[in-house]
Length: 353
Ligand SMILES: Cc1cc2nc3c(=O)[nH]c(=O)nc-3n(C[C@H](O)[C@H](O)[C@H](O)COP(=O)(O)O)c2cc1C
Image (tube, rainbow, N blue to C red; front, top):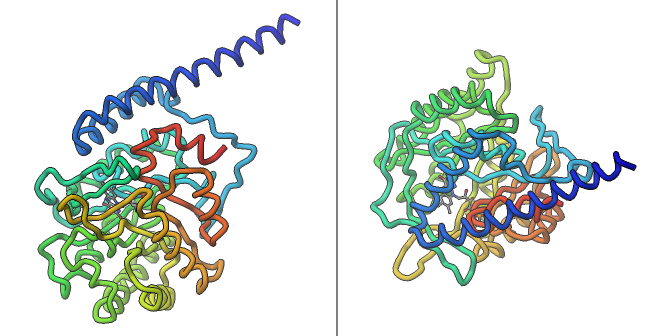
């Protein structure tokens, strides 16, 4: 009797704490909206890191583990289908704390060989009426070496799957671009659980040309030549995923996927943000405005690939029905970014429970 009363009390206490936590977080998110988007993103990251340093379970979502089926792909074990998309932790400094919220995987980067500042600020704008963002960041990152130093130090605190996203520097020409990717692949191979090749950001001039007929073969040939050497040296096979643009037409998307599979790409992240314009800002649109475009691209990919290859859906996922729709259309995993910005950590429970 006493035991059940104690159990009830603990349970009630736990529920009250959970509710209190979500009220505080909702309040903090509304305060963060008063700041420019890039500043509020930095404050969030610093706060998440600080809370994690107080107690690594403090941010943990209440995900119903019994209901969640894990996903295994080429030796990688994902405890559930939801991960954090690239670009949130551009420095490799926060993934362990972000992972503690409950993401089964986190993709860090995109990293380029040399550090770069990206475009001038302001470069992110909220599109509040559509729960969306437009950004024209342009691969601001500390460079692959500094990123890997951060990752090496923090990886021991992280239990999830770690993806490392790689790209090219702004001033590397398209003819030389494969060297940037090979360089970053070689550097990140040891620490990465998977490596994402980003040739789809709309904010680096001409980057998307790398998926055209003129460049993709050469890029993939060089990458997989290097991969063969890395497999021998490190005695492990790190899967390579390609992140695709949602702005390709169906025939182009199929061509890119087919040539990639032939070369050895293990999976596809579909998709990056879509190129667009909002209030005179030209950049990448993400969030709910991207939803339809992203799911269309997923359906096209799903019509031509088999279960031997992994599909990760990204773009406009913010409700439970979005996640279910992606999983019903061939995705085994999904990533969020903008939905997390708007809803905060409670989005994990909303999507997964
Ligand atoms: C501010 C911002 C920065 C991003 N930076 C990157 C990046 O560096 N590399 C990358 O592959 N994708 C990047 N993305 C794209 C996201 O990873 C994601 O694919 C896209 O936003 C679609 O998902 P969402 O609608 O849930 O935001 C960025 C997105 C945003 C909003």
